[in-house]
Image 1 (cartoon, rainbow, N blue to C red):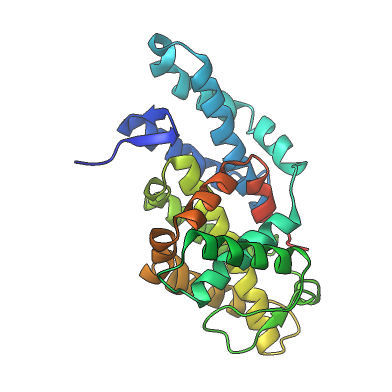
Image 2 (cartoon, one colour):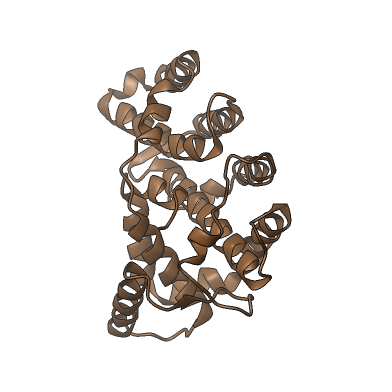
Length: 269
């Protein structure tokens, strides 16, 4: 039996409703009136507004609300979520601490950590990445890179090659129903933004390793492939959350924060 689909915890969706939500996330990605970063953040805002709307209505009026909601959003050219996305509350340190922690666990996937040991490891990694100390080592890159590499290799997310390659990746992520693999669609969409940030980190690391002058199409394409190989489709990454429930709980709580979407999409320094 298939697991029930939820927009967010305690907000169930029918199959048809979930399909409509995914369809509109794809329509937003295809919208030509905004840049990719803004549209990705706006997607998270859209899910938040829809959840709040569904929680505020009585059940008898629910069937018409989702269709009416998205029809209104398209008619307004996604004005409200894009307005919020362009002036978001975000924290560069949140991205650094979250990705830095997950990379550290992925690099050291010891399966039997006590909760106390995991908490100590989390505290150490959070402090290191909050303060931008040391270098970042992402498997399988052979050369760790410092945080100032993000300034040395700023990624132009508005460049055609980036918008095309990463936009197609995000579209396929939604089209293949991967957000449903999360605890809810909202959490699953948050995982997509986490991987989006990871693509940035890999691209910068690749440019640093080869001493490139800029991050170009080759680095972005390779970054997408490595993110899929070492994180999205890798059982070792999933096992982190199986064997370290404290990490799973921390990630879920972080993805539930309204500021997390923008914090993962915007630059980490």
